Length: 266
Image (cartoon, rainbow, N blue to C red; front, top):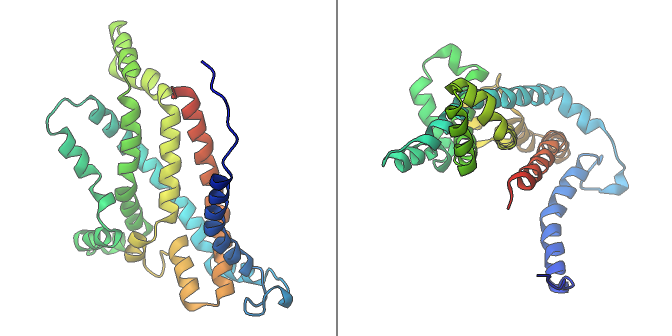
């Protein structure tokens, strides 16, 4: 049965444009301010790259630290989260829903509360408290539920259960089934979950702000610091760097999402 294609409604098109402008114009102004000699004077004052140079000089270390932290966070979540997701997907217990809610609790609790809990529990361990490892654990606590939810949903697909049972019938051991059959089948979902974790980790502020020290600042904390204590132009230049890091990740998320939809969508 073929459906007649209707022209797009002008009202819907205008609404979409207005909403897009409402969200994008403030960001565009902020990015533009990073190139202006003086935001108060405007474009008539000319443009410069001095603010970017000052940000890289003062906060350049936070960019590399945040990228490294997010990368290690993804690796740690994979090691812990994928086996946990599989266990949840195969669990047959009336307590399953309770267990799943407990796993997602760090997402519902404010980041400041989670950070305070970590300080109370581990704050006395001096070497740990003053290192990036402390922030890493906090990021893993925050991001792990997202990866577990995404991957466990992939493991629960009926066709994957049938595929695993067929491999079991043919004599494949657990590791053979898990590594050789299951993981390749859900690889797009794992990639999507990893990109989500990376984006969440690199942009996390509330939890990180409480866990960081002057020697362990991350990109969002440095961004807040630049807005609070420096000129607006310098904060906007920092925003430029943040966008340069995060936008490719968001584009990758969309690309992987399309792959998953095309492969498994109905």
